[in-house]
Amino acid sequence: MIVSEKMYGLGSQRSAIRELFEYGKMRAAKVGAENVYDFSLGNPTVPAPPVVNETIRRLTEELDSVTLHGYTSAQGDDGTRQAIADYLNRTHGTNYAKENFYMTMGAAASLSICFKALTTSPEDEFVTIAPYFPEYQVFVEAAGAKFVVVPPDTENFQIDMEALAGLVNAHTKGVIINSPNNPSGAVYSRETIQSLADLLRKKEQEFGTKIFIIADEPYREIVYDGAEVPFVPKFYDDTLVCYSYSKSLSLPGERIGYVLVPDEAAEHEAVFAAVAGAGRALGYVCAPSMFQKILPYCMGQTGDVAEYKKNRDLLYGGLTDIGYHCFLPQGAFYLFVQSLEPDADAFCERAKGEDLLIVSGTGFGCPGYVRISYCVDTDMISRSLPAFHRLWSSYQ
Ligand code: PLP
Image (tube, rainbow, N blue to C red; front, side):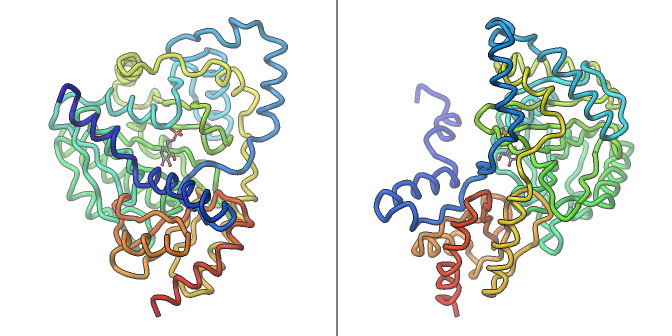
C-alpha cells in the first residue's frame, strides 16, 4: 500500500454514527423523511443565540476585511483570549490571562493538540472512563500514545475509582474526562472530581511523575435542574481544559474552541509552548478568524437549553412509561438506555426495522446500552414513541 494503512483504515471506514446518519438519509429518500426517526447525531438543533448572527452582521460592516478575515496570531487573537480569561475569572474566581489560552478549531483539535503536546514516548498512556467519545482513541493513537479504558460504572455513570486506580501507572500521562458526558448525560459530582484529584495526586507522588487531567467540556453549559459542573482546575492543578463552542453556541460547523493551560499546572510555560508546537505540527494554527472576533460578544451566552430539557423530559418520560430503563441525563443532549437484549448492536439493527436510528453503546465502551440523541425536533420525539413501543413489544 502506498498510503498509511492506519490512515487508510480511518478514512475508508466511516464511524458507526456517520454510517447510521447516511443510512437515515437513504431511508428518508425511500419512505419519506417524516417516517424516519434519526437519533444518531449530536448536531445541535437549537439555533445559535441571536447575539451570534447580530455580531456577524455588525462586524462584517464595521471591520475591514483583513481584520475580520485575515490570519490572527498562531495562538489566537489577543482580545478574544483576554475576553475568555475575563469571563472565566468572573465565573470561577480564577486569575487567568490571555497567555493561558490557545484558540483551536473546536474540542477535537483541542484534544488532539493536548495528546500530541504531552506524548514523549510510545509507552505513554492516556486513560479515559467508559462510556467515552470514541474519537478519543483515534486522537490518542494519532499522537503516538496508548489508549486505556476504565470500565463503566453503570449504576451512576460516575467514575469507578478502584478500577481507575488499578489502571494508572508510571506511563500514564493523562486522564481524559468528559462531563457533562457524551453519551451518558451524567455530570460528574464534586465528590467524583475531588476523589479523582486525590487519587491522581497520590499516584503522582507514588510514581514521581506528572499526570494531567484533560477535561473535555463541550457540554459545560448544557445542564438541567440546576446541576453543577465543577470547574476541574479548582480541584486539580495539572488540568488542561479542552473547550468548544460547538454545542453551547450551536456552532459545530464553524470549528471554534480553545485549550486552557492554567499557571498552576506543572511546567505550565513548557506545556503551553508544546501546545502551541502541537498546534503548529498538526496544522491547527490560527483558528477561524471571524468566529474568534465574534466570541467576546457572546461570553456566557448559550442556545436555548430549555428546548433540550423539553426534549429530555418528553423522551425520558415516554420511554420510561413504555418500560425502557433509562439513565436520567443531568446534562448534554443524549439519553443512555439499556438495550433490550445483551447485544446492543443487534438491538440497534432491530430498531432500524422501525426506522428508529439509535447508536449502540459498544463503540462508547459500554456494551448493553444505546445512545439516543435528543437534539432533534420535539415533534419527531412525539411521533417516534409508537415505534419505540412496537420495538419494546417485539421483545416481550
Ligand atoms: N468531545 C465530545 C465529548 C463530543 O461529544 C464532541 C462532539 O460531539 C467533541 C469532543 C468534538 O467537538 P468539536 O465539534 O468541538 O470538535
